[in-house]
View 1: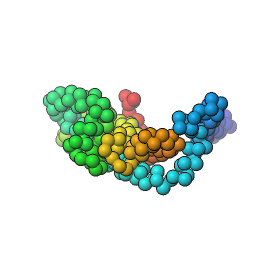
View 2 (view 1 turned 30 degrees about the vertical axis):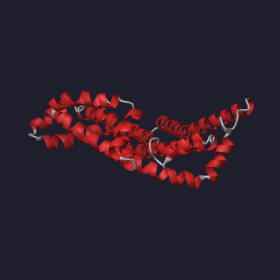
View 3 (view 1 turned 90 degrees about the horizontal axis):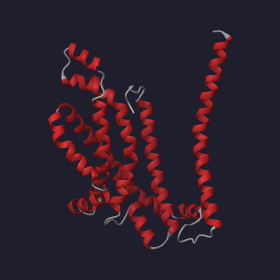
View 4 (view 1 turned 45 degrees about the vertical axis):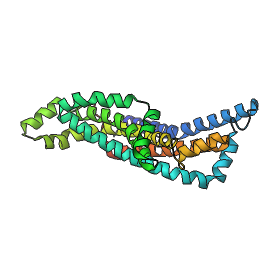
Amino acid sequence: MDAPADAARAAWLAAQNWLKWQRRILPLFGAASLLFAWWALVTYFEVKPFIAPAPQVVAQVLVQKSDILFANLVPTAIEALSGFALGNLAAILMATLFVHAKSIEMAFFPIVVLINSIPVVAKAPILVLLLGNGMAPKIAIAAVICFFPTLVNMVRGLEAVSPQALELMHVLSANKREVFFRLRLPTSIPFLFSALKIAASTAVVGAIVGEWIGSQEGIGALIIQATYAFDSALLYATVICGSTFSVAFFLVIRMIERLCVRWVPANHG
């Protein structure tokens, strides 16, 4: 290999390494900037603690009440993960049915859109009345809120197969099962993970909203308790705790995506 090629490769590797460090450093810089702005605004305008506590006060509560926060995070995490699994599984199965039976898609997809258009705060009381005050309605709410984005993306992914590849499968006398598992399903994986990353956050939101109605434990219940008690430091700490779990869940899905997805179809995104 000649010297210009070596120099070009070295420059490319250096650029990739710098980009990798930027992806690590810039989010930390952004978070530090927001914390500083938060502290500066609260201090400069002398905001009352019950309205907006200083970040160091919230950090102190996170440490002092970590046992309470963790105890309430556990049921929320169980509800979110269960709803995530249930909602996405149902969406994948229905997307498969829609792709293979267009008449069923035309009949029921508008109903799915109609149900999705109902605000989650309106669905929650109905599901609580139907399923009671246990974990079941919270899991159902998380599942419902995950369902629609995954359904839309999965249908799109299953239909994103190349016409030439589909024609080749037909020439080879492949049946519907072989076409699905060898062609449609692999093509849909990048679309599926796009939906799963959205669902990772919305599942936590759904579980928390469900806990606002008739729940004695969980992040949502703790938010309501802190609000009524005017304990703003605990309120902020609870929100941060729930958001941290949501971000961690999102990062886990993205890590799995990097392991599973080695290519992206040209018409994706």
